[in-house]
Amino acid sequence: MRKKGRILLLDDDELIISMLARALRKEGYETQLLYSSVQAVEKIIAWQPDMMLLDIELGEELNGLDILRLLHDENIKFPVVMLTGDDSSESAIRALRYGASDYLHKPFNIEEVKIVVGRILRDARLQDEIAYLKKTNIAALSQNFVGNSPIISKLLQDARRIAEAGVPLVLITGSSGTGKEVLARKIHCWRFAERDDFESIPYIAINCTALPENLIEGELFGHVKGAFTDAKTDKKGVFELADGGTLLLDEIGDMRADLQGKLLRVLEQRTVRRVGGNIDLPIDVNIIVSTNRELRKQVSDGLFREDLFYRLNSFLIDIPPLKERDADVLLLVDYFLQIFAKKYSKQPVTTIAKDAEKLMLDYEWPGNVRELRNMIERCVVMEDTEKLTASCLPLDIGGRQSMAQERRKEFQILLPEEGISLEDVEKELFHLALERTNHNMTRAAKLLKVSYDVFRYQAKKYGLL
Image (cartoon, rainbow, N blue to C red; front, side, top):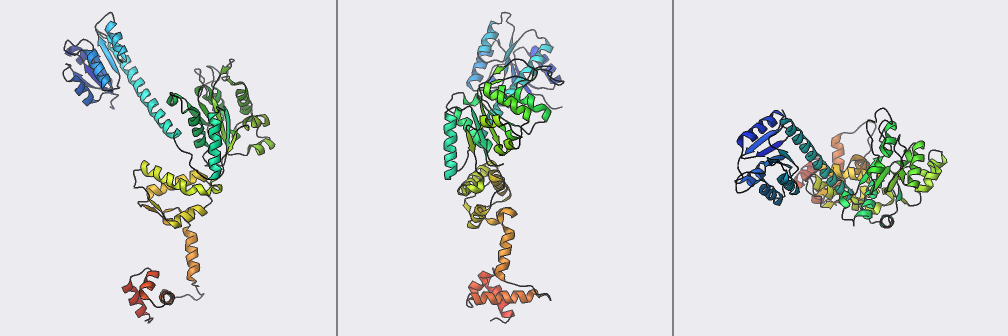
């Protein structure tokens, strides 16, 4: 059976903690017992428990509170539950002040112990998950919108000015893969980065087309208990969850007409009403909407509300496709090469060959920055090289088909209807190499990419010398 957690028990009463340990092992926990405070901190750290049950009164030089303080000084963060026989709870309350998670009175109710241990371990795991997600989210927020072409420099300058001014509603447009969400995250950072509590400020992104039709309204606005069959409890929507921070509504151009009307109401009144509710809840959230649709055309086609369009269009940032900012292509290539070399622990690419540069600059990148990013990730994973060449690139980008066609044109070899022997073709190639190099066999051998000895042997064989 998979262990549910590692629990260390420290108490000088061997009978009590042996009983507790047996009960916990039956529940699937792994246990370790200590009966003395002698070198207890070292032993605790070495075993690395997920949780600890610690007696306050150990009857030794160090009591439980002393050990708790020492663990705190060592920056040990696993939860500690204090065990006490003090009916007044005074010492247990002191322990809570020192950072204990909870306390249990002796004699124990085993069922109570199981409940407390299970709850505290679940809470600890949840806190670890939250900390990890926060760390991941901050890493995502720190992604750069890379580019120094004039059009991108101006775009970033405008976006930062909008963010620092605290504009509460921004529209970002652009083709798929241009970096709309990356820019939205940068706007969030510029807006709140100076705040001491930046890490706790919410940034929530929701794709308006990714959720089923019957769920999106509840996800956006929340719902009250009993609003529909599966509404077992009240639930906050993303507007409430993002309160005090930033909410990105991606693919707004595909939102249903009825939801467009409700969104307009939220934007104008800065309140949200949960599905099935009758109370308007105030919200303070910076809203960024993005789309790859041409909203003006959507309006003229009757697919998007005109009043909502004009409400969104006040602060518009349009990201150009990558083919219109080719000055940024090699900058992006270098950026992603470094990112993925670090991610996959690969040797960094230090040189980009001229043939690869030309091919990437000539390519139109229909998938924009996302396509370039995915291509570089594949190159880093699949190739072990310090030099990125044309042969490393995918077929459609690498242009190997077109390169082969060019080579065929250069050879000017015509295949006659009656056929031709390979020996005759080889003889002609050796003859052409000698003509082009004025019969310098060293240079001719290099043209055909063979050694000098092989060239001399073949040329003599075909009577060319």
